[in-house]
Length: 361
Image 1: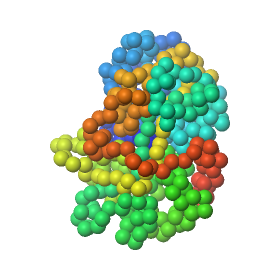
Image 2: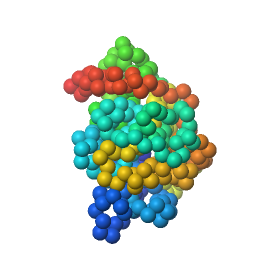
Image 3: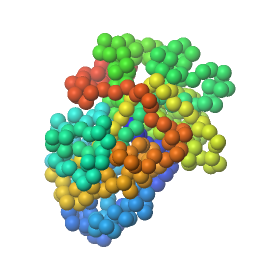
């Protein structure tokens, strides 16, 4: 979900309590980097886990978990790279497939293969020779739409990338900055996968001409600009299309009061890009043993079963439970756009520079 989702994904936007608030209680005098009693997780601001699940891990392992949240995934990764020689913590969670090569090329992680790695679904495994990162979750970055808007305007919601550049959808879409936001970058990569090296720039020229709005990050896009979200309604937002996640509609149902009988938002299935999020043991981590224990925990069935309804992403462990709300309101895309990590590594920075020149200037 990341699938940043993602991301990431709806916890902050719906006002839920995250781990940094409910799970990072006073460590009894130990510094966060003491290496004995506290293990520190650095993450983007959509990390969350159930109190009971976290408490059970802390009791079993003997480590108190401290969480440092560092904004959007793109911002968090960049800061982690800048501080890698004197890291803020022991484990980093939230680098996804769009930024993975940047983290690996900059030596952000040291090698560790967690217990339970053999249970990861094969399609999500990477870096198998060095084991510097561990897949934790997956999700689809997709355009979401406000059902009420399209019903009131008697307009069919878009279903594909091609639809978004049609005059009927002029000035309706808000997306995130591809240079600062993980879902924004994922959406850019989705268009590059769809239209190829020679076509994605022309597509974005048309999208810009059709009035796409760009904001810094997901929380602003979804909770301040998108008319279909709970936050957007409060903010009187006026954009009925937003780049978010396929798992966003279930959150709008689960945390609504009263609960609607159907999701107020939908997903344009032909606009999805598959995201995978990873965690890794930071190079120069103070508490390597605590970091290893925490990485083991992220692959347990207990955590993987708990994760979907906290971070609104899909598990990567075989036989992990998927909530029925996901199946009904936010199923994974059947044919999402994907891209080989090597191609992302070779082209990402140049594509982002070209995108910035095309769209922001």
